[in-house]
Length: 177
Image (cartoon, rainbow, N blue to C red; front, side, top):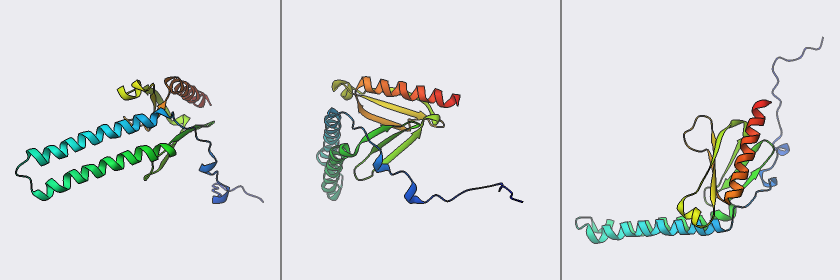
């Protein structure tokens, strides 16, 4: 007598898994690199102003702090600027049949994959700098969180709205299945 097992959990060979490198990622708009660099420069200006303010106006600060703090802020600024420039080259998104994939980072690379059936809602936003360069950002929210689980910056407003419509349509379609 041939009995069917009650539980089956077959092993899948890692070689047979789809490769992330095979995904055709779409680049964000080239003007986003300018937005990212400008934001880094603004952050650097604020950090250096604070650092110089402490050096000049805080008399009772130890001299070691007065020397190290501006150097530390300069280091943070340089790393932020490098992350903006080098991170842009890695940044991309892909819309697939059942999910959206986004990758970003330079030193700390990350790839986020969200199945459409987990999406609660999407929204399109612009900060003043993005608006100046004609860019938007798509935010994707899943269940159980107050903040977005995925944020794709550097999209044209038309592309962001188009992606939002597609994702919300797919979400509704997945709920019907």
